[in-house]
Length: 199
Length: 294
Image 1: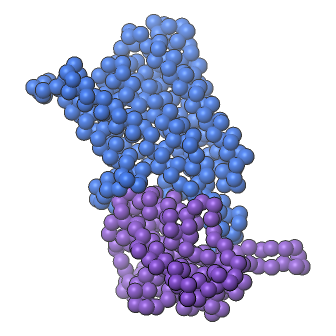
Image 2: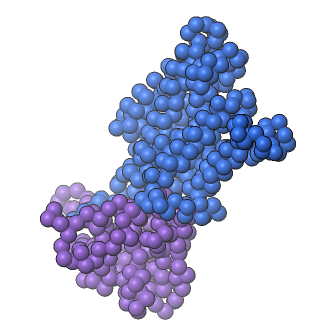
Image 3: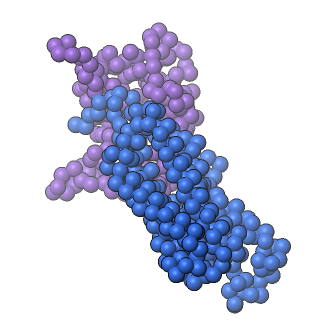
């Protein structure tokens, strides 16, 4: 099994639902985004087009972050998902530097969202193990283990994200990859991303 | 909402900064200093090398987000260069202390010395670990496909070379301070001049190649020359830290160390060179620019 995501760039409208949903689901600190949307303005006035490219951890087959990690905190599951064990991470940031997709963030300390202090919700989700460590997208592994899709997939209003087992030829993601032209980010680096884009 | 434009997003790394630079510098200097001191039989140099290595360890640990988990860094030498480097550093310190222990009066009963076979073996293995300490930081940096100006074959060699530049500079300072310039220091001075000159050529070649490489590599060169690290690199690293020491060492070499200004020249040149290596390594770290994420 190799879990992966297929993103149809032509369907993305830049609503940032995935970004917000990811923050809500994973309780990330201010300024920390596991899911991001990059923008690009193309063309010349008056024929201008805004293109969006949703990006996240690529859960690479040959992940540079896994080999850079000295503590064994970053590991790859059998289904290809790359995870960080916060209890094992020493906070050396070697994985952040090794990642060509800038998908990892070092969180030295979790600041509250508002100057008045943490909200009741922030107090509820407070997790001291997530300080002094590196974070990144988990493909919502906790949801996958319950048979659910990643939250960014579930909330996308245009259904531009499809998640599935890329080794299973019958799944929707594999079918799209067979039928449509697709590309990965930085294939030249040999990392083997599990996130594909339909152009 | 944070947005980034894709295709041209060039961002210098900020994850590794001053403290890890100090750790890499002290480790490299300690490694180079130990090997040179062992080679020329300069006992104070061995001690100083171990102190430098120990301080490198402290800086490395303090730089971690979780210093109390330091032991975990040693767990994956099969893959991670930080793990390998930490093991080299640990071996260097433990074996180095064992090597010099019999020289301390109250441990003279130990069954080895620098003249026995066992002592020589310990010394050679320690030197091997010291060489590992000298090169691992360069390997750890080059193990980053995300930063083209680091991800080259030349960078680890350059960093290795700098371990000897700073190690030899520390020897020269120690010789001057301890009043041991009576030794024939001319071969050491000549070696240091050669190492500084070769490292300058390597740096120039490395960044010249980078200047016609990828966009992020070219951005690294821009930051290093006309950008925010230009002053540190060109002013501190090249002029004050390389050209001035070369002139001073040239003076000492050609006027002979017996010249009254010889020891002072050696000390000043050594200190400036040490400062240069620290600043050059810092500027290499600060100008590591990521490839665009998309």
